[in-house]
Amino acid sequence: MNSDSDKNAEHYFDPDTVRQSGQNYKKVWLLSSYGEKQRGGYQSLKTFYEFDCDTDRARSYTMLLYSGTMASGNTVGAHHDELKEWFNYPETSFFKRISTSICEK
Image (cartoon, rainbow, N blue to C red; front, side, top):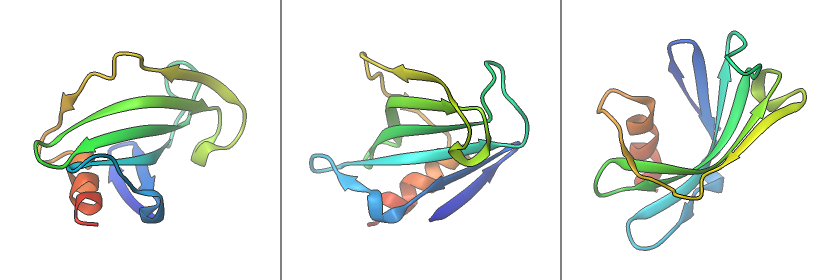
């Protein structure tokens, strides 16, 4: 499992779960675990992302929120994005570091 720190959170993904989605896209589940409870009562979340390996953008499909760290405790919320809007991410973000890793695979 690969990890990446971003301020108050640790972000993880399992390289073995990366899936090809079309010619230039990769899908992967990311786990984000926070040092403190976040607004809404969650302390970690798992999000299913699709990355566009050519244009440095991503979109989320599903987000599951957990009361404890590392996806432990109760599920306290879920979001399923019907629109699946793409968003761009900066070169210095954890999204860029993760996309670089999974797009090379």
